[in-house]
Image (cartoon, rainbow, N blue to C red):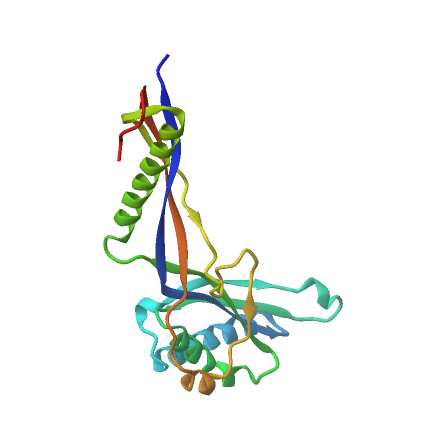
Amino acid sequence: MDRFIEVVGVGKLVERVAEYRADVTLQVRAAQVETAIKEVADLRNECIRRLRDAGLNERELQEGGAEVWRPWFWKKKPGQEASQKLLVSSDDMQRLLGALGSLEPLFENQRYSLSVSMRQPLFEAGDGARREAERDAITDAEAKATNVALVSGLTIAGVIEIEELDVKVSRSGAYGDQDWGIAFAAGGGAAAESTEPLEAATRSSSIRFRVRFAAEPGASSHH
């Protein structure tokens, strides 16, 4: 019977937020569907102009689609509601919030509404960080197997098999990177400008490998 020792090695990978992302939904309520569609299209165009003026570039603005419906809760009240969605992003949370805050004056009209829902941020690791985490995982597996061999009176005699397991990712605490949804209304652009800059949020991922080592009888001398 072939002897073997199988362990799981773990290496830590730290990633920083590279891009914050948000869904911006614009809604217009009007008596006629044609009016709602026209006004929400005009509102969308003005929002795009303001976001650009606030410093967001073409790459940071994307189309999210449109929708028209009659809310069921209006009952006998006539009217239609139309919405447009924009996808916005930025590598700087304060710049993103400042740009969203610049939209606030457009929503003084009670028939217009704006909602912002933060999506999961885009995380990135530094150059070579993942390869280093993978090496750490293999080294960790080797150390674990060596300890098992030592107490079992065996000797490690090489690797039989390596399998990469699913990465375990911790929550960073950044908006959108939770197990639940989060939404808020945009506003307060001036406050965002005065905020002290901070480091981007980070998250830690566990890179894991299942490693099977061949084992032979005899006191372990592997280091």
